Length: 151
Image 1 (cartoon, rainbow, N blue to C red):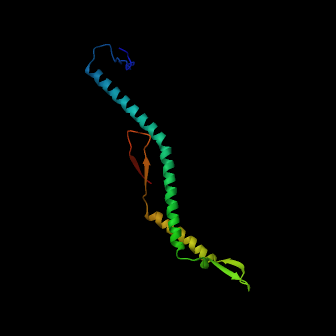
Image 2: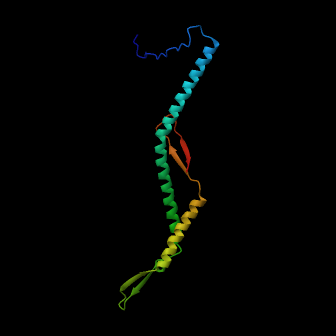
Image 3: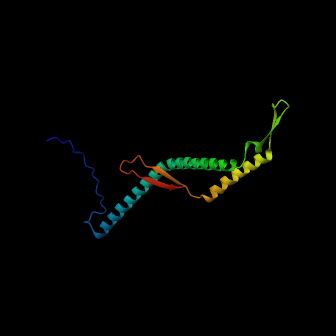
């Protein structure tokens, strides 16, 4: 029969603590060392995973916040501009032949609009302190789920 599925087994050398037969203290030492090694490996694994994922999560959070800011600013600008017309912002001067000679902008109204838009956007961000972003975990085929991140 072929040895298709056979492979070399990993052998971990035994750590000898003393030349005497195993005592209760030696067993306790061995258990403590094994537990501390497992803990150290787990900590290093966690740190490396967090360091690898952190830039991705930061980039996705920045993109989600930009998207949220764009939506809010467009919504509030439309809301404020619905109260004004073009004639409120610009005065049109015509000559005797009904040709446009000058357009004069009404700076007071334009400044009022820009301050209203900025104020409404700021109020929206103050009242809406939480938004939810979903991060799809597609790299892991065994774990098709969402990680929920609050920004």
